[in-house]
Image (cartoon, rainbow, N blue to C red; front, side):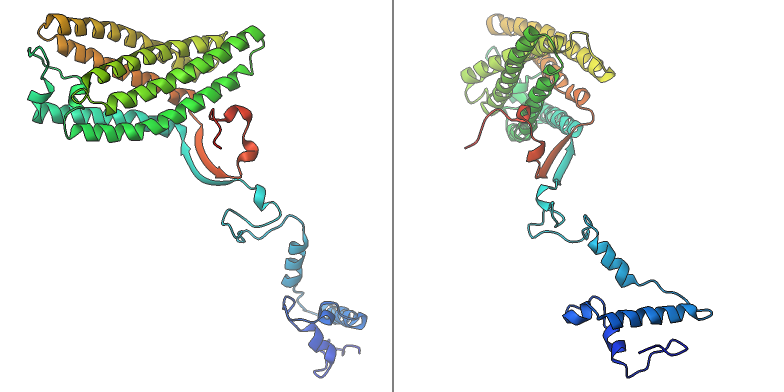
Length: 356
């Protein structure tokens, strides 16, 4: 049937009913989805009739545009998610990287510094003000001014605050140890000398295990109080001091092997300079600590224990400062917890053991 002169369709025509159904209706029959040739011709004639009218407005069919967009490959609705809640649902949903948590590595390093340092300050002030007799008590019973770290963290309730602080502090320390080992391994890839590569790999393992032993000894010193078991506390403290200084020295030696031409960036240069300064300060303070401890133990001199305690605080501060150069080594890195990240995992990023 042809259109009328003004383009209007007779009301009783069946073709009008067939073409007026909603384009996206799910209950349409197969004939409605695939109209007959005469129906397609009728639609074309009607559109041309409207276009030929003076002042007629041509409207673009939105349903056709949406159908074209859905037909284009690679276009998926942004608000469709899989059943697992892991990300957008589509052909590549199983391979999409979904980030659950991201924290700046610099923030982690600041946390590992501020937490024990702030807790130590609180323990010192509270114990010095409220428990002066307990923290100044020694086997010589001589006059002292400065209490030791073991004294202010061995009384109650300061011991519980210190133990909670170290418990929160240890987790990031282990993560930093793993990250440093992988970072050193990545730097080995830039070396061309096979002998230097072999030496660097050996030093990386030494630095890594010294760091782990140091962290473990810190746990032992914290949770084995000098008032509860002094002989064991003293031995664990010696292990902590030995591994701490050995770790600093081995780290400087390793950086010299990995950077034969010296630091390449301002951050690396500042990090190396601070590491050297903190190591030198630790060595000098350790010498004073041993000297004043012997004077206190065997000669019972006045204020010898206070000087020992002062050297102990300097050693602890230098140790924290050395480890906080991590902020210069990893200024823009982030700690990431994500789904489907196995494709980014490489052999050198393993933690060092396998869990069955």
